[in-house]
Length: 294
Image (tube, rainbow, N blue to C red; front, side, top):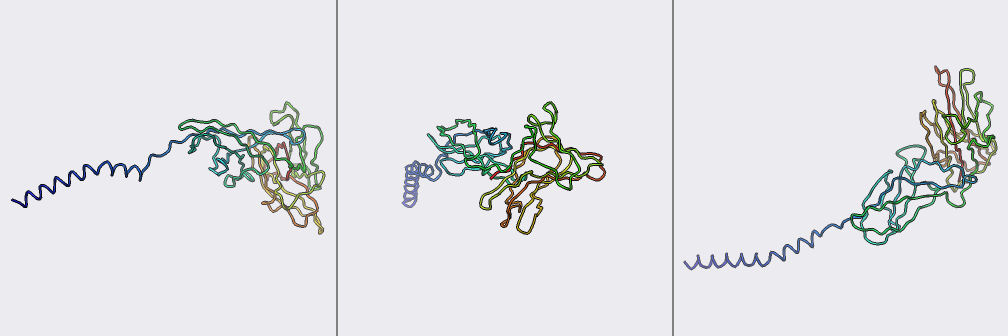
């Protein structure tokens, strides 16, 4: 009998201890698993590009990504358009860099090193969507070694000795033209070879990345490369092949990664080249906004 009474008292005491300890245990769980912060959001549809047309040429671009930084810390790279969460409240600095596909390769994404970073201050609040419309420009000090927009009636590209095709300037009402006038290469059975190069040679540095920008549309593949003049002579180096496309595209070609920059180079020329595909009777290549810059 005494044993039963003792067991009952122990049971009642244990229940009382558990009851009293329950709030403490629940509070401890809150410490271990605190409530997650509610994020704010930033929304970007694209990056705009601003240029001085006379000095820097067209503002047509192919910025595919936004590289996002919050208070100087890299948050991530996102393909346009996008809406992403950001943890934090109050005033924060949001920075955006314009992203490209280097050499037109989807697996080679990069923040374009020739353009500025867009900065803005955003008041972040939980569950609030903040729309950002970034505008970037070319960096100060960018050197344009060659520009060709096909709009002034003259050409900075000339045929080489192996060329037999023609490079014409389209009229403003040509449905295939991109902006005003464009370049139009016509190849056929009697004129199967196309090779045009820079009319004037130029310098490209070793220590700074050099890029070629080009808008194009073509029914046949063509290549872009450089003629490099060295003490030993002229070297022809192909950098990139551009595939047929029925719509206008823009490519950013990194010459340094294309093994086109030589330590012993004296001067350079850009060339564009193609040969009529066997079995084809004709081919067309449209060009616009050629820029060589560093």
